[in-house]
Every structure is written in C-alpha cells, then in structure tokens.
Image (cartoon, rainbow, N blue to C red; front, side, top):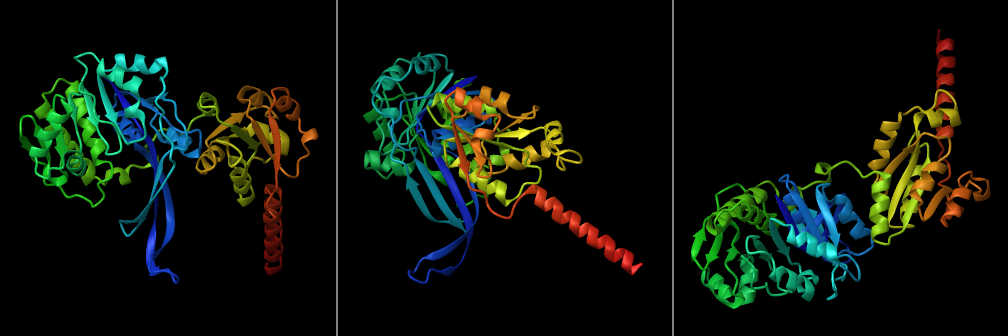
Length: 453
C-alpha cells in the first residue's frame, strides 16, 4: 500500500520543565526548562504516523530552507519520501512550553506558505500512483494551490481521498470521498453546534461523498448516513495534540483496504482514542526514529533545497566543553553540520599509542547525540582531504589555533570553491591537557602511596 499525504508540514517543539514561582515583574509563572524535544507537526506528523504502520508514504509539502525546515526533514522516519512544493518564507513552528503536564503558553513563528504556482512533475506522478491520498490542510497554502487542486479533482475513482480541513485553509474539492473536520472546525464552517446536523450541512455545502465530524471522547458524527460512532472509554491524558492526524491517517488506511466509510470511521475513532490514551503527539519521541543520517544523506538533502552545508573535523577523543562550543559555533554558520571524524587507526597515526582512549563507535555516538550535529562521517586517512572532496561542504570549520594556509585540506576546499572559517576556542580545554592532568594525579597518588608504605 502507498499513501500520499499532501499538506503543510510544521515543526512542533516541546519545552518541558517545572514551575514553582512567579515572575517578580509580572503575574506569570517562571518555567525552569529541563528538556527540549522536537517532532514533525501538521502534515509531517500525519506522514510519520502513517509510516509507523509499515507502509510506503510520500509527503508532498513545502518547507523553508531554514533550521526548522531541516529539523522536520531530520525527524521524519526513513520510510517517508519527501516531494517538495514551492515555498516562500520561514517554516511554521509551534513551541509549547509545558510544566506539570500542562501547556503554559504556545509560541508560533514562521509565516511561510506555499504560493499558487505550478508544482513539479513529481507531484503529479506521486498522486497518480497512490492507493490513498490524504490532504492535511494547516492553512499554509498547500491545499489552496490551484494546479494541485486540479490534479486532486482528477484522481482515479478507485483512489480514496480524505480531506482534513483547516479554518484558514481552502474548501475541500468535491472529489473528496471523506472530509474530517473536528467539532470546533465544523461549527465555524457551518455555524451549527448540533451533530450530526452540522455534518449534514457541510456535506451539502461541500458536495463531497461524506463528512465525519470528530468529537473527541464522544466519537464522530457521520453524514449523510446521520450515524453517531461512539468512542471507547479509555484512560486518556489531557494532551490531545495530534488526535486529528491519527484519525485522518487511520481512516485513510481503512478506506484504502476497501472498508466501507462507516467501518473506516469506526476504526479511526478507535485508533485516535488509543493514540490519545498513549499520550498523544507529546509522547512521540525522537528516540523512536531511525538512526542518524550519514554525511552523504545530509549533503543530498541540503543540496536539494539550496542550503548551506558546514563541516568540521577532528579526533574528539575525549569530548569536552571546548568541542561542544566549537560545534555549536559551526552549526550556526549554515543549515546542516557534518562532523568528519578520524577513525581509530587515523587517530593512532596522528597521536601515537595509546590513543584513541575512546573507540570510534563510542565517539561517533557521543557526537550524534549533540543537537548541533546532523551527521558524522568517519574517515580512515590521516587527513580528511578525500572525504572533503566527496562532501564538498560550503564551509570547513577549524579552531582558531589553526592557520588556514598550513592546513593540508585547504587546497581541496579552495579547489571546489569552499570557505574555511576559524572559530575562537574556549580557553583551558584540550584533550592533551586533560590527559596530562590525569597523569600528574596518578604520579602524585603513587608518590603518596610509596610514602605511606
């Protein structure tokens, strides 16, 4: 099965901490942030949830060539194929500040949108090869694109099309097999509070095959059959973020399997209830995603979107604050950072025995855990020249204690038109100094032991 999801990708961020006091200059809580967690949002969340079902997923969406756009790409499961729509402006991002299990405030940024211009030919190919199409409209222009709407209206009759609307988005095309607004959206669209009467009014207005209004723990109202589908009584959390996407994905998969609309809605109500009971989108963690990209994956992703690739290199034998600061500075110079890491044999040739003290897989693991690092590429040679010739980063970063003209890789970077940037180092940190201090401690300990003996 192949599902194509068309819509607006967002970056969702959770800043989680504790709140035990008020701000002295305003009656607002002070949140001591303890963790930051990013996840795909909007159409990107729908794509991630569909990929979790083990099916082939294509996400047709627009994102800005900015850190938020690149983070969405990084967070998506490997099973999601991305097809870009034209996009102008910054990637939409929603940041929830949470304390004690509750949202304190949400901060929205990024006013970018998909313009009404002709999308690429890959969009049409993907739509025509789909077993089901889900439109996840978040009011950022994807569902309003006139050429895209034309292609959606021409989908083969046997391809189910599900439309998840948005108050700031476009009306569904009449070709839609099922439109799935939530209750608040349905009230805004129809002006009616009663269900399924509101669903019936929208069914007549949109001239689609069916409308299912989701009502949270009360289930869903389906038109034109005027059915009320009850939700199971499960222990749920107060965080329902992502429930609508879970419902839309589940109903799309059920219709693609050939289920009736009524049965598909019943399946989707159950799936959305279970999703909320498990913690909703807030429980979706990066740790559940595939392993980090390699250097070539990052290069391809950045080049496709016209971004700026940064690379930095070294042994990183004992990771210390100086390393972290250098990598943070490097990441701010572009849209993605690849660390070129010396292999164990390479470190041994440079530093001599007993280096490295930490094996390459452990060093790689530590670097990949840093938020500033998008990928780690290991090289076996003494210098990273060969790897740089392959990656061709726009910027090659070295610490301020290196003279660019004396770097063996300088000629390689200059030949393909790259830039070498030196960044200042944090004083007092070096692996050699740390090892020397440890050795001095060991010597003094031995001396004390001999005197005591």
